[in-house]
Amino acid sequence: FGGIDGGSQRIYILVKKGSPVKNPKIYDNGNNFLAKSWYFDVNGDLDLKEYNFIRRPVILKAEIEIDHEFQPIYFVGVHSKSKYINRGEKMWNGTPEEKKEYIKKSISNRRKIGAECGRIRKCLEETAYRESPKPLVVVSG
Image (cartoon, rainbow, N blue to C red; front, side, top):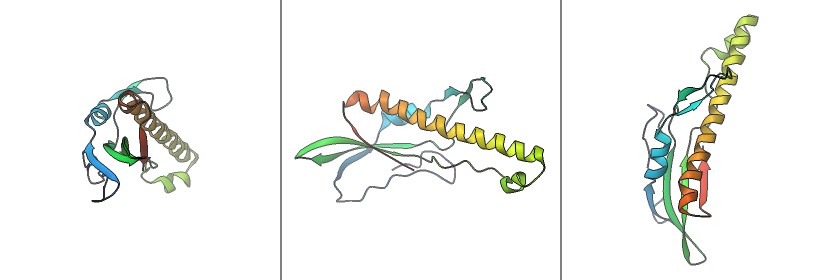
């Protein structure tokens, strides 16, 4: 399931046939929420700008049997790794100005990671947790 966007580095969630995970489906409520942009201060300059995921996560809803009862379970596949800085090592080892620019870009990238993780949490609160008081949630990536 997945491959919604992200160019050559798309996100997928694989479900093994015959596994305890039953009835897996793309979770439209969550995926539609994550498709929408939101406002965020990327640079720490107190200027909110419209922001979208660099690689949009994929949310899958399924069921799993626990104590002879099927429970909803949500899987979120996300690319939460560090954002690459082109020529980063050269900038770090370069002039003081280049090093300062590297640090600025690194901090901005960490802010983006935090914003994307916060957006996933907001999505789950407004979708999965409204549908089920105690949903099982797995976030990976």
